Image (tube, rainbow, N blue to C red):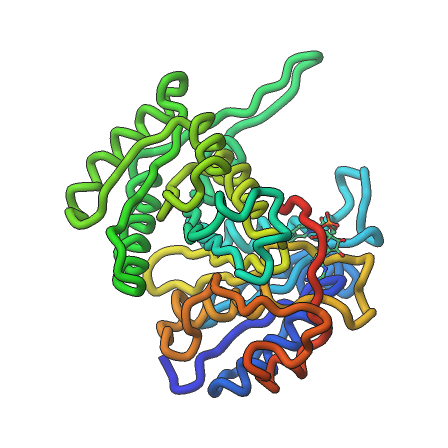
Length: 353
Ligand SMILES: NC(=O)c1ccc[n+]([C@@H]2O[C@H](COP(=O)([O-])OP(=O)(O)OC[C@H]3O[C@@H](n4cnc5c(N)ncnc54)[C@H](O)[C@@H]3O)[C@@H](O)[C@H]2O)c1
């Protein structure tokens, strides 16, 4: 990798340019980076008639990492199946870049513990990572409708399960090194009913002995959904497939009390660039008002430094958060760089894609 890593920056729509702009300023203050800014989502539809051009996908594939804001907005909402939609850009990137592993750390900030719908004593000490398989399962299987009957097929191969299992075990080892705890992977499936889950459980069990220092437990997804709110602090790394991961990662988002604190990393094969983005959307209701909270994007940039550019010493440990509020523009310890970022705001929880 060259001295200055090349980062393709995709601000996207709505508040995307604001939060990504603040993050680029933060990165510039931390080191040297070469930014290559491109259009994605609605902005790309307006300019080129498609949410993701081949040129942008190529630039992303050739980059050291990709930093994304968010896409979408009412301007591009349509029920016309033939009209381009901003999310097609996102899905096209995941597929085109082979991003099969989605990592979402959840670590409530002390300042926001009161904002969680759970009691403080339940969430105290929560520090978990959801590792979700992102390019397989029911979201990518055959689907169709015939009259009143519809189907969505779920398929997983042993190879797909093996590679995401390794991502989870390796993440557990890394987290343990950083905070000196006994690493544990909780693999979530529905093995009592689904054949894909039985294969999942078998393959994860086969991979586990390669990581003798990491404890493995299996949980059925219905039980996991319950345990996640009743004893969240007991989880370390949660490994699960695409659909279960979509649901459980949003459930775990509620533990933090603010969607604005949640970063994510989507990773592909070793050596290939990853995609780093906040979990929230483009917030068109507040776009252009200068009140968008950039912290989830800052934390995504920290994940980029750690997982994408192998510069953990610059990015620190994501998911910690400093507990910044809108009325505390000095940021952590009066950090002037953070103070220059647009408005810091705590806002209500919502779902995500
Ligand atoms: N990954 C993505 O790009 C992504 C994810 C989710 C939604 N979306 C798209 O975003 C658009 C809006 O969706 P939505 O309203 O359901 O979800 P949203 O996350 O954009 O907004 C939900 C609520 O949270 C607020 N909010 C979100 N991020 C914020 C921030 N950084 N600072 C302050 N407030 C913030 C918004 O103002 C809104 O009130 C839609 O077009 C949707 O498709 C994109």
